[in-house]
Length: 255
Ligand SMILES: [Zn+2]
Image 1 (cartoon, rainbow, N blue to C red):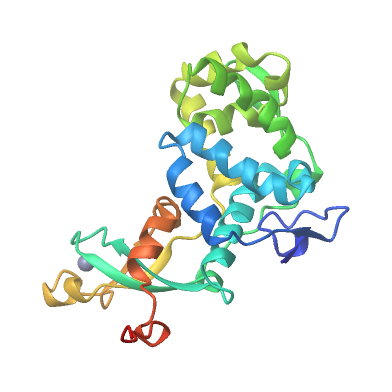
Image 2: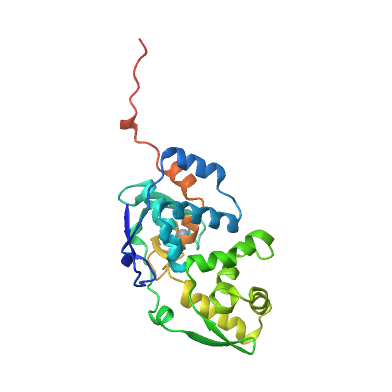
């Protein structure tokens, strides 16, 4: 299936018009369920390799677009119209909410174009540093060291380190500055995270239980669910929540 690059969350004007992303066969889903690593770092890498095998242009994407491509591949695997049943835990009353999920419900915020067309210079760790959104390929160079040495296992931290242009040359230096940051530098990191990586709006859903418990006097049962939580453990959920319709299975007597 063609995924048009203009529909990617970054809004970046890529030199190629589309990516060729395939849905998975049943056998591949089973393989995925069996082999997908449970730790965050290896799972990220596993998903990356999965979409890279579909289209080598994945390496040329801005990092912020990679999650969307992975999400898209899983989405078209589940249903052609990108609609499926799933569930989420209500952040307010902790009950399970059944959801009819559509990819079109997900609101991706576009990056501010200045974040990829201009260079951002910040003061960090008492030094002037250049910040830019890395491409997937650039990110993978930095990421490979964390896969190998497992010094840091938090994807959020690794993605922040990769924002610093110097991180390709002086990875340890930047890593130390980020990990040991204090005061205003922490605020700076939080701001960068929001600017560059906070691209998906939480999904607004309705919780009947909240209404029943009268926990929401103003919002009419509306709660916000983070999409990340929906993406993880994706297939297992899908298989549990989307049983094959009975009409598709016909029992016949054996003669
Ligand atoms: Zn609730």
